[in-house]
Amino acid sequence: MIIKPRFIRSTLALAAVLSAGLAHADITVGVTVSATGPAASLGIPEKNTIALMPQTIAGQKVNYIVLDDASDTTKAVGNTRRLITEDKVDIVLGSTTTPNSLAMIDVVAESQTPMISMAASARIVEPVDAKKRWVFKTPQNDIMMSLAIASHMADSGIKTVAFIGFADAYGEGWFQEFSKAAGLKGLQVVANERYNRNDTSVTAQVLKLVGAKADAVLIAGSGTPAALPQAGLVERGYAGKVYQTHGVANNDFLRVGGKNVEGTFLPSGPVLVAEQLPASHPLKKSATDYVVRYEAAHGKGSVSTFGAHAWDAGLLMAAAVPVALKKAQPGTPAFRVALRDALEQIKELPGAHGIFNMSPGDHLGLDQRARVMVKIDKGAWKYQP
Image: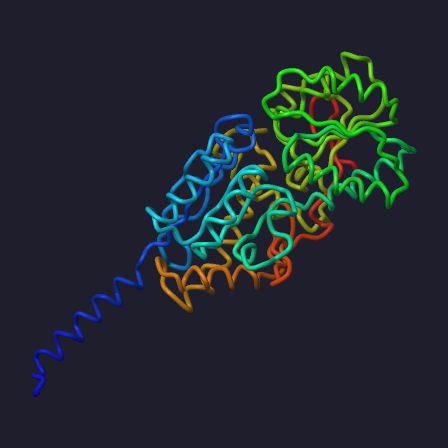
């Protein structure tokens, strides 16, 4: 069989066109956040932050597909399946809450699609097994923040602590991690209560907390629902110290809690008090950069730590994409694998919340530089050196 030169030239030209098309394929990012429902005060700033992310990375156009899971686990799973099977995304960002993110793991692992969660529980990424090797996250682990709280309590002379948290993976994870930290600091946990995110009353639980006569109460909730037990404690005349988790670090919590949350202590990412950080703080520049960008779009005082978790997810993605592009093209299984591998190799990346050093065994990569203690003072966040 004789192959004519014209046929060869045509074939080569077609291959060149196809190759050029592949080289310019868009990167597709799927996002599911809780923009409505009980976790909306967390999800809305995350959604707003997605709009601030780069439209091109390493010369490649980036398309973001953003869905609302309404703070519902089933919806989060459905969104993830749609993004992967219908929209053919290269990476998933989300979701907002721990239960939603945990439920999404099977879906991304089955399709071998990397995922960066904006939820806090260490269970989302630990241990790094066959499924969780596809999952990364940006919020500080509960144990890191638990140690900050327990240390502050011990330094303040507190001996006994009453605990109340969400009746889900977030609350349970916090109880387990805080119990470890409390033991290390010589604190005794004398009460353990739970409530649901959509409850409108926690009177029975609050009565038990007050009855325990603890020196301090730790409320392990997130968003505006975390203000409910504290309002009950104030109503019942509780006079001890009250601590919250970093799950309340947004202005909606201040608005809803009002005078009831005055004097509260909590750990937070440095971004919450970026302007108050000393110039020598390693996160001063990167945290302030996010604050400036967000407030330019949404107004002074609008920034929240939850949006910053989304921002850090975007920074991780942007750092991994150029590395992955050297190995494969967007829209392919090989590119998703290359993205996952590149995320695992990120070192000394400054974000809004911390400096990320990923590894095959650590899909969070944060250290103690990612936390500060904060007090609610006169309705505002005050950095505690």
